[in-house]
View 1 (cartoon, helix red, strand yellow):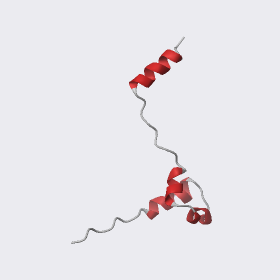
View 2 (tube, one colour):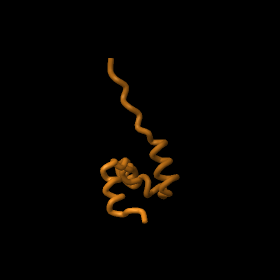
View 3 (cartoon, rainbow, N blue to C red):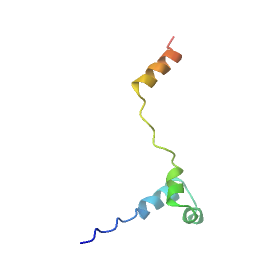
Length: 62
């Protein structure tokens, strides 16, 4: 038995591109899914305790 192909989330991508990013329809359809996702930037990375300690040492409270 074959696995069903995953369905691409076009509705979500259209919501992001047309709604959130406010692309025109022609801009949206000329963009690749990767370009639209990249427009949101990388997800924020959590700050590690070591980095927080370094920042606190570099910029101490007065």
